[in-house]
Length: 342
Ligand SMILES: NC(=O)c1ccc[n+]([C@@H]2O[C@H](COP(=O)([O-])OP(=O)(O)OC[C@H]3O[C@@H](n4cnc5c(N)ncnc54)[C@H](OP(=O)(O)O)[C@@H]3O)[C@@H](O)[C@H]2O)c1
Image 1 (tube, rainbow, N blue to C red):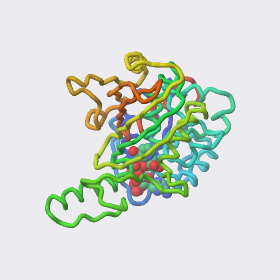
Image 2: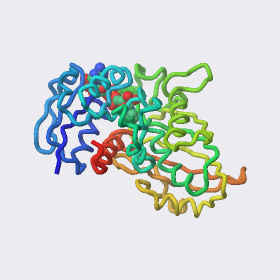
Image 3: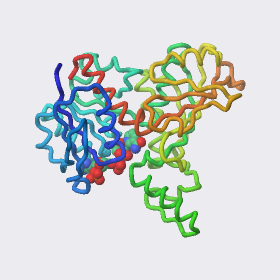
């Protein structure tokens, strides 16, 4: 069996660290692993499948010889470095928002639209595949089976997003603010514009002139691209909550055809990568602590929206660092290996 030479760019970060762990557990045959970050992490030693690897600084010349690279270093570095990797014959699977809406870059959740990778011309031209936004990934995992069953007309989503979604620094900030608060000291904030411990911020990424944030526009536009249907109307409010790991979403869906909660549960229970946890009388519903460390997307609280003709409400939770980032990226690589696309 062919073995692959793999790079991870951003290997010292919140997602990069998970990429190493997810790749280690995956069946992907890895002949060589190269880890890249900035001088901050360079020299750090990490174990992968029993061998020790050292994080290097990211010099594009060092990409030569890799088969594919998982990028998770942010939009700016990706804009600069991904073309350098592609130029050297490396297929890039990028976790930032830099390339997602480029027309020739496939935006992929394998269970939902993996088939676009096989379409002639799609990724063949760009050699770059984009991993969607974490909140979008978990939402489309449940929208797709419902869309196939009843055609979705409109989605209203409100998110409750964990601080690890803002990277390692935000995790440390929540921890330090919590300690300061409990000890009666003033809590300092650097990552967020306000204190996040014991607070909720209706603000993720930058605001634009419409009053929406970039995160909200990502959920709208990426959903339409992944489901390949611009007629689906989506509106979003994205909110940061003081949770370490696991994004939650309250999703209201209007469909063309009537889908009862029972029918929706059946469709979702059969959806690949989705776990139905829905038994309110015994307090069974997904929570961030349910999803943390798990690769699947969890759904519950499925009920009829009685305010419209064909409406459903549901609650979706997933680990933002896993299915929202690292797991999805490694699954894209796995899909491409399986389909002989690499
Ligand atoms: N966190 C999530 O839940 C999540 C989910 C989906 C997508 N994403 C996206 O994934 C990306 C990474 O997020 P994160 O949360 O892992 O951030 P993070 O914890 O801040 O880690 C960023 C990593 O990128 C490296 N890096 C920064 N600039 C670089 C450069 N110029 N060249 C090479 N490496 C560079 C950093 O190096 P050092 O280690 O040396 O500092 C670090 O290893 C972002 O685009 C983010 O939007 C994150």
